[in-house]
Length: 238
View (cartoon, rainbow, N blue to C red):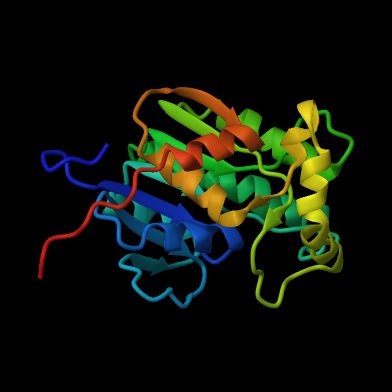
């Protein structure tokens, strides 16, 4: 955790332009215990009050950025969809699998010991869904990279604003999710919809956690992690 003697935790974020990535940026506003660095392929408008560096570079140069900024923790919020990939499975794998693993291995080479990655509920290498199968393969391979601590977040339907990118099925799902959540009990609780802000808070709380190990967090564990996030410490008086 942050203290006057150790200073703030340096966190690198990839996928800052996506729903969860933007929520992580907003979650860091006003915090003195973190220093956030975003790494992206394109510029993004930062929310009011955000104090962070954003490096825009081709993914082939991302390891050079990591070498320069020397983060202690990395949060991966990269992701696309088959629809965005034009239904091309190889194009989907290029982002959700190959790029994620390239980033993870580059981070490990540059001394990052804690890695947090957003996956999906139902991810498994034997899943019938291609999407979930790929997510499962990524989880398996991330566990082999060698991080001292690996946290996998497995949310279900994400609630939150996706400017210009809200698919019809997702709109219906978000409208129905409060009622659906009440119906999902017991072993089905992991399929409950969750706010993107909550997932971001969970990622940030885990970034501030030091014990090692490999952990997968589904709905209830995501909520517990988010609720454990310390309130921002007040900055120095002007």
